[in-house]
Amino acid sequence: MNVLYQNPHEARLLFGRGFRAGMDRREQKKLAAKNEKELRDEIRKKDGIEERPEDAAAQRLKDEAAEMYDTFDMRVDRHWSEKKLEEMTERDWRIFREDFNISYKGSRIPRPMRSWVESKLSSELLKAVDRAGYKTPSPIQMAAIPLGLQQRDVIGVAETGSGKTAAFVLPMLTYITRLPPISEENEAEGPYAVVMAPTRELAQQIEEETVKFAHYLGIKVVSIVGGQSIEEQGFKIRQGCEVVIATPGRLIDCLERRYAVLNQCNYVVLDEADRMIDMGFEPQVVGVLDAMPSSNFKPENEDEELDEKRIYRTTYMFSATMPPAVERLARKYLRNPVVVTIGTAGKATDLITQHVIMVKESEKMPRLQKLLDDLVDKTAIVFINTKKSADFVSKTLEKAGYRVTTLHGGKSQEQREVSLDGFRTKRFNVLVATDVAGRGIDIPDVAHVINYDMPGNIEMYTHRIGRTGRAGKTGTATTFLTLHDTDVFYDLKQMLTQSNSPIPPELARHEASKFKPGSIPDRPPRRNDTVFAH
Ligand code: AMP
Image (tube, rainbow, N blue to C red; front, top):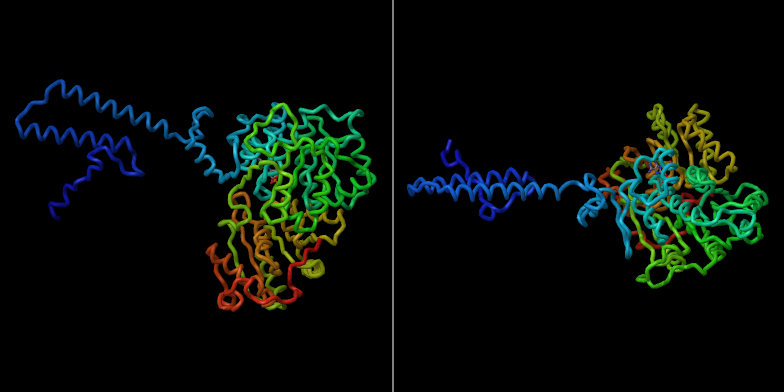
């Protein structure tokens, strides 16, 4: 109603040369030019002066220049995906890394690859990648493959499911193709590359992924895991193979009994290094690393250029966390490594809805059955802390008519494989498991993770719930908490607070949730502590 507001005055930022963020610059510029012209016309009219033709021409030139500047400006601001490789600016690379949640630590880091065609992989490998149906590289592959191709040592922080296997397999196969094929002449010297993984299941998964690409190149892969005849495995290695995929315990057995040697092995991958250390495999891992030739270590001096034609010992290490023992390994066996972190590996993502319910031990089973009834045809993993109670829960559910299978370290190799296969193919929709399945196993599409028992530490909780909400999907995690779990109350409360999840009132007001665990007096282990039931 007030005339004052009928013609609002637009502030002229920087006398017409400034811009507001978030608005089309070209439009702002046009408007500024128009305003200026109107203002000049008005002044001229008031003073009774005609516009001189040369002024009009100069003004037109200025307008055109402004237009051109803007067009140019827009071109610079194109998204990186519309640019050719050589057009990429520092800023584009920064955005690229942000888009894929890639971060690096280290020196002389090569650019990540934006697509398979821009990678330096051979055409044969690219064909194999295409046949595998991998349309675009995953972030860990974008970051780690160029490093591997330069024979750099890599510490990768990425979860299973991120495509990390192919991230080390493809450079490993590239390395092998540079060497003479394994034949009768050199097979006695052992394989060219070794991959170590904490569990048989993970080793087998890595083998599958490796064979997917290796068989096009005629590269032979042998897996050396417990639960199979060591003589047979030794025989397979001696028959000649380029790649060995192994659990550290069994591999060191093979080496000590002289079934295998690593005299020409210069490429080594430690998958889930923290987990191998957790499981007490440090001496075996070190034993294997020491059995490899040390003559090809890269120079300690990080400024020294690597000779592309030389063979260097290359070490890849994947680890979700860096406990001191893993750092020790890295310091001793890696040279000037690049640390690549993808996303916030190891942290619960926003895609997981977390419920924590305070229960009594006796209420767990009826509650569990209620949750499983709500699943309909979706799948769930039920985590239990001990093998014995896993068997009990599994039997009770089976009797009640659920399609359930069990995975724990007390089962034979064959039983475990049958369980996993049955779950993957949805013959069973409930998997009752101890922490063996908590990490490293690639089970897609789990809708619900149920912690029938709360694990003894928050890291394991994070790994367990990370079985759901993968690859952009949403998931639910429900945890049954009892008064036996007070040791993790503090950490769990922090975790729930950080992820904006509801905190049950019993947990929120409990004394144990108010103090850091270190500040509580020690106590002897109790029944409900996490037991690594391998
Ligand atoms: P990983 O994290 O290595 O266990 O891989 C998880 C799953 O993703 C495996 O089943 C792989 O076959 C698959 N995968 C790996 N890389 C790609 C890719 N670039 N595109 C599509 N699928 C992939």
